[in-house]
Image 1: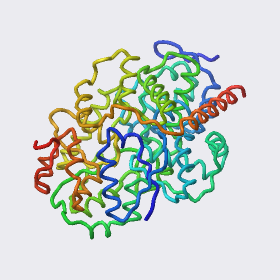
Image 2: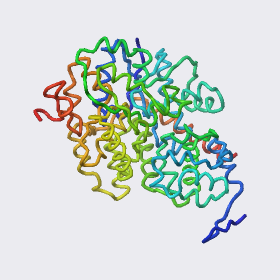
Image 3: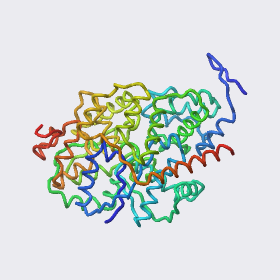
Amino acid sequence: MKVAYFPGCSLHSTAREYDQSVRAVAPALGVQLITVEDWNCCGATSAHSLDPVLSLALPARNLARAQAAGHQVVVAPCAACFNRLKTALCQLEEGGEAAQTIQKVVGFRFHGGLQVKSLVQLFWEDVGVGAIRRRVCRPLEGLRVACYYGCLLVRPPEVAAFDDPEHPRAMDDLMAAIGAEPTSWAAATECCGASLSLVRGQVVERLVSTILAWAQRAGAEAVVTACPLCQSNLEMRRPAHIKMPIFYFTELMGLALGLPDVKRWMRAHLVDPAPVLSRFYPGVGARRGG
Amino acid sequence: MIRARAATRSIPLDPGFPWEVGRASGQPVMRCFQCGRCTNGCPLTWAMDHPPHRLLRMVQLGAEGEVLVSRTIWLCSACHGCATRCPNDIHLPAVMDALKQMALARRVRVGDRQVALFHRLFLATVARLGRMYELGLIGLHKLASGNLFGDLKVGLLMFTRGKLSPLPQLIKGRGDLRAVWRRAAALRREGGRQ
């Protein structure tokens, strides 16, 4: 299966280990990722806050490039990028005034027949839980994880059009497929505060401490996310007494599939994953030898 | 201009305001009947000056002055919980965005200047480079806001873990993007004249 890959800005900086694990796990599951050539930032929260035209035109330029390269499916690992790309796609498909504006501003003609998917969606719908289970060689048996969907992976439902917006289960299924035990918990679709983190750190700290407290109460040893903002906020803004590692779902999948670079990804974590993962993978940790 | 008398003070009301917000956001703001589902599910009400359902009521009543200087519109993280649950299909994050844009266009006192500054710098960075440059954005925001030493420890930790790349990434199509910005600005001017 060949798909266009839109990494997004965070995957080149704060979420480097997400990018690395995606690029390792996808081919192991038979998915060939072809990076959208010369992609640009989707505009994120800032574009839709300040400028309605740019908020659609910025993601649409990437869709235009994917269309020009003959792709049918664009995959975004970041939940925020996924939301922006899919919002632009929905507007283009509707074909109203907004669609005309977008095409004029970006300078392309939309032909249709393009799909935008989050990576969780691609693995769950197109690769399939069964195919993943068959490839597992190091099952994470007994690892209790809280799957954290956050906001934009499943919301708003008319845009995401994927899974249940209040009780999603796609990531839980993926974690169960690699042998882990997803726990049922209250904060699975709560918001981490997203881009408020840089300027309103204390606001995000309060949201994060609530989320992590729920995860702890549900007996989870780790939280699993599919969004670079969720991951960095949960690790950066955690209360000092909760030392729970926050994994990208692809990192744990890579570990279960026996991929070679797991140690490199884990070294990027701010919370040392060794106490949780060393029973599956001795020597894994945040620092070399540590 | 109508004046509503509250317990302690009166505020000016503009009956045209809700229709203006409805047009700018594309949302049927007059449909709200104050069920409060938005506020009940909102993770940020505790940090806001007006909870979301009340802000929407203020929009309906035309309390433009109060609404546009509110912190609420800047603190909404657009998590879309409210939009998912609204029985009247009002997409509240779109209303919040329209209000932010109106507040900036009308040059009122901005409810949260730090957040507004962050969004401006973010877009300015993307306009020039084509992609986000975290370290640059953090530096610019520190200089512009005067908060030089906040988050130094966690920032250093991120840097040593290779999570903040020292150099920006520039896309080749920066000329393309400049044209996108130019055409978007032209549209905005056209919209303003109508």
